[in-house]
Amino acid sequence: MPKKSKVNEKLSVILVIIGCALLYAGVTAVQNSRNQYRVLTAEEYSHTIETSRNGQFDTDAFMNTKPTVSVTFNDGWASSYYYGVPVVEELGIKATHYIVTGKLDDPRYMSREQVADLADNTQEIASKSVTNIDLVEATEDQIRQELVVSQETLQDVTGRYISHFASPFGKYDERTVGIINDYYKTNRISDKGVIRTSEDLDLYAINAFTVKSDTKLEEIETYLNQAKASNGWAVLMYHQIGDGESQYSVSQSTLKKQLELIDSRFQVATMHQVSEAVNPAVEDN
Image (tube, rainbow, N blue to C red; front, side):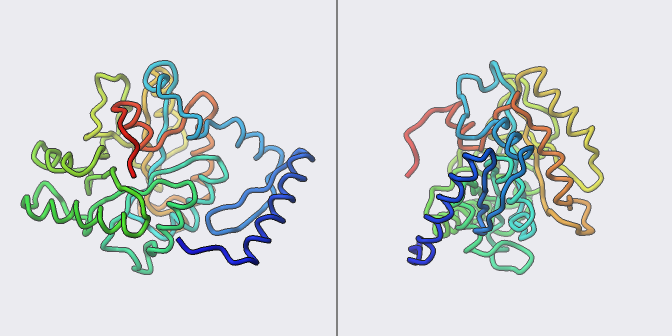
């Protein structure tokens, strides 16, 4: 990881002092992963404090006494870096980003440096294969190549162990899951339903609600209410963030409105936090 310059170190100290002064005055400043700072309004600060943070994740409450939400981004689009991450950071949410490593450094997708930046700044990095192929139609050798190369690439980029995966197109079967299990702790798919009870929970077939450009706010509210009613687990899946023409593109303002539905009645969790709650293990290196 590159060292900070002396100028950046001095700037960080100054910003900490400013932040403390602002906090004393009843407001606060936030920094996003692109090193941009701004002062939160009193309303934004209040929402940030009230929203459940990943750092407060209660493993005993998971699927027991409190509903859980996970926010995920698919494919590693550059727009999710520029327009999605500032929103989740502002709301105190640590999201999981599933990266198609064959797209790294493509101008439409995140660069290696941007993925490393996210890993260094509160976001979780996971794999979505190398070429985003349908694993169900692939040979075993092809599947292992997709799983291993993407995992190794992301570990090299982030310096962290990559243990979570999303099946391309949400397609999977017993054969692909058996192979995924050799390398990863979880596999996210794209079935819409809320995971309501521990009996419904399969870490290698994690349901997710795909949010599209025409998804209404009421649909997400209904989905989250289902999780509330059962103390279940709701997983939101986003792709591009911005004003694109794709059916999977959601504007930044819409994203914020949707994620503001995740109030203090929920706890927010990454895939790692959930997998460790279900299957406690020695911390990965």
